Image (cartoon, rainbow, N blue to C red):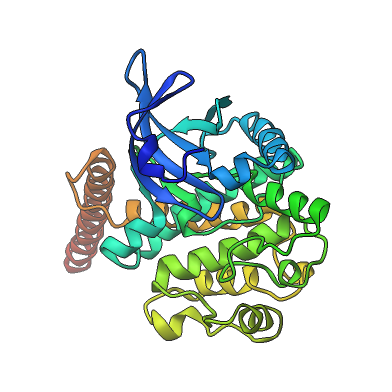
Length: 329
């Protein structure tokens, strides 16, 4: 049984060749690879041997990712295949070169307009998945991929559900979700619905704007307590230029009780779309003549208005002169 992920580099699994290791998680390794015929790039997630060799975990892994592979949406990573090659259990998915976490580490916090678009992408994906009855359970900056065309794409639907089911079935004490992003109800082991994903999205947006998460501790139990009990510091304390509306959205997502958050990802998306629409309207209003077609039309409108005012002034002056002349006569 292979113990070192580097030993997998250069090997072929299914229809894919493994090129390089690009990430490691608690349950799987992530490789960049390519289709053996055609050479299209792919990302390959390979179960660590400990879990690939466990029939219960491996079965749940394959079942959950079969469900995830049926979630076809532009903002959800496309799973190409779930398979097994000898002792290697893997799934192949579309390759995206960067995660949101890597982008923040490289360039620092995002502009608010970028965060709004990021949030819209994730909200669309969550609305679609929740409608299909699938909860992600582990939304975080490392599970938000950035596509080359600018889209944000969610990865890893299925991992947290696999771990949760495995822990329940075997009685093993396993951390489910990422401690800095877990919702209060997740930290308490209560039943989850889509609003738990919205809380984790709130933490993700907080991080995207401030480069910090709302709560930090080296102790898992203390961190869980903070999520359950402590109010988050408003992001404007760390990022004074954030708009009051964006801050309200994030703080609502971070509400302790699910009923105090948005009732659904669709409701959140509606508000984000409103912000985006108003931003576009403001940009159009501020166009300078000739800057683009909208600017040309604006310039023409202004010219027409100036012409109308000029004619009106001439009429008034003409009437005044006529009155004077008649008076003299």
